[in-house]
Image (cartoon, rainbow, N blue to C red):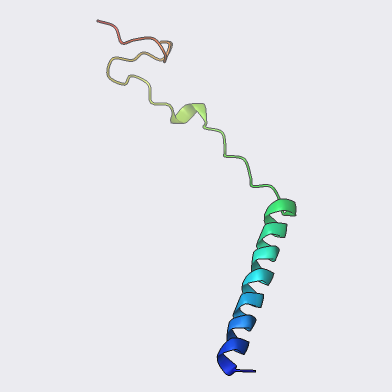
Length: 62
């Protein structure tokens, strides 16, 4: 068998093996950690045009 063909088949076999391992790990591996909750102290009070109790979805006051 030609050396180039052997190397090509070996590389293809490695690609299939690593692809299968990645798929199995993605399917059955640990779930990613949920994002950390934002603490209330990080919310900036007194921002321009916004009061702490103001509804964030409401349009800005005129």
